[in-house]
Length: 252
Image 1: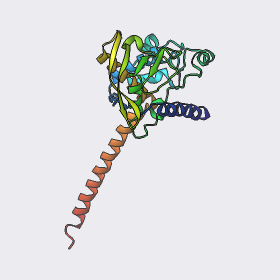
Image 2 (image 1 turned 45 degrees about the vertical axis):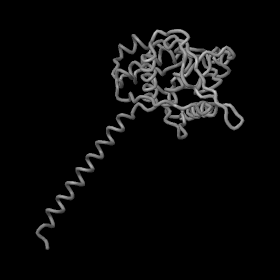
Image 3 (image 1 turned 180 degrees about the vertical axis):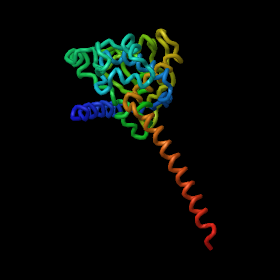
Image 4 (image 1 turned 120 degrees about the vertical axis):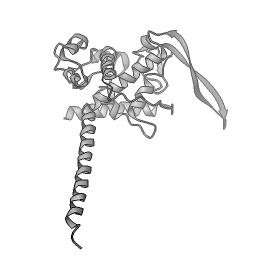
């Protein structure tokens, strides 16, 4: 329990620093993939192949992926890269000491990142993640060679750049009240990725959907049970009302 609270606090701190340094960049609306099992499975594949190299998911076990339609054999054959047992948690492949040396800090655990990311009136944690993963651009002044519009001066490189390719933002500079403001008006593609822009947005949507599911795997079950309970209560109220009417109909 103490470990869970510590990771939640670290993730929340990471999220808060992201918002503080975000510069007010608007967040795009993330697609809802919470009930799309093929999308969640693709998101899990992307997470294991691209995120789990540096980020762990200490409170998610590989065998829990059976809840999104994967068999134990599929998990073993396609997703077990950092462990040999399907019942173990998702551990990062990178050595924490090396991560701290390379990035200045150990990358945060991502188990609950979609829930801990404070929206603060701009959208959901999923919206932030969806925007964040689509707004990297090359920056030679940074140690990793990358920067991000949603999280300026980030220490993390663009892990999905081979899929998206390299592109740079085009800013519209406007002067007002003695100050200059810079608003992004588009992107210039510098080199092509293995995916088209539409395919990349689809893939990021799947990945964010998986991060949402991983943060609360029982969410869909909870919502389904909630609707069932509400339907039962409505039926009970209707039945009680009709019984009451039938009981008192002959009494004047």
